[in-house]
Length: 367
Image (cartoon, rainbow, N blue to C red; front, top):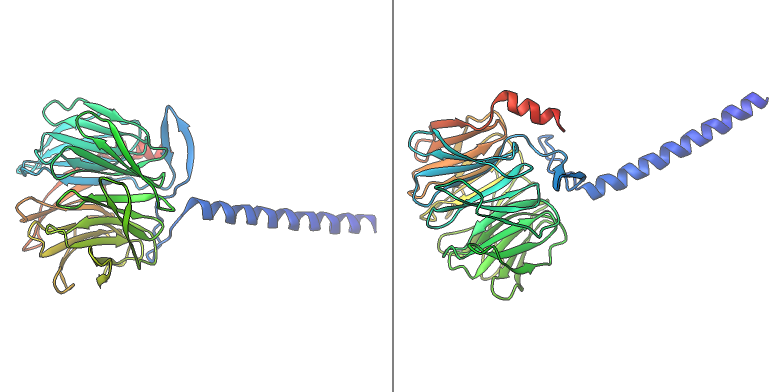
């Protein structure tokens, strides 16, 4: 009898302990912002495991190319990778031209200054770095964010640099001096992408709180909030004439918005995985989107119709951009390569291997 009572008591305590563990796990999962998509892939978590040597180490971060950018003069392509490096590639040959070292954790975003002389980069180490293209040496390191820097972009005149972060803020800096000018607050969750309007008066920010905000650059005030996505917003871009904003989301869609009214113009559906990046063509007639379904897609802006699907990568397409002449599209992929497609035919022009298999395995082993 005593043994039976002991077993019943032990079973009761075991059940209570299991329920407590399940509750804690549920709370933890909510805080971590682990967004699962329809294709079963898992989004970036806000969770931070440890700060080692000042680096914020991500959990669940993809191993691959996270950011790509064309130099405005068309001669170079920049790519940022989880191996902490920024690489500069010759557009015509696809050959690696220079490697920029200094970040202590993965690089999430890259951008060229309008005159093509500087590269800006954001990283999981919580910093922004500025690099002269010709020397490849760090010109300046900008600190202040309390979490990963997910996006960087230069103002159209090149005097300002903006950065978006997992700390829910956008920060504005003087590009050359590295002086912090302003902090934009209002989002309820981390920021995945930012963009300047063509006239430099607005900044758009895309957030995990499912919204896009349009900010006044000079005052830091929120002018409009765009709502409609059913999941976190991962990417944002202004049309060349400044009348439209495009956004990509973990809900697998691309949306077009009217800047003046904040109204949704149309929804572009077709991707089967979350949309990671969007970019307008230089003439504003087309939009390209990259997705975790391993494709990039080109859309007609006026109709919202899909024009072409760009294939080849063996992993999700995390970042896309048009060449300055509008004839090529570059995409960064989780397969650790940079892909260059012809706009009209959709054919692959070349691929650039961003990291060796051995390097990729070493990084995975450290996680």
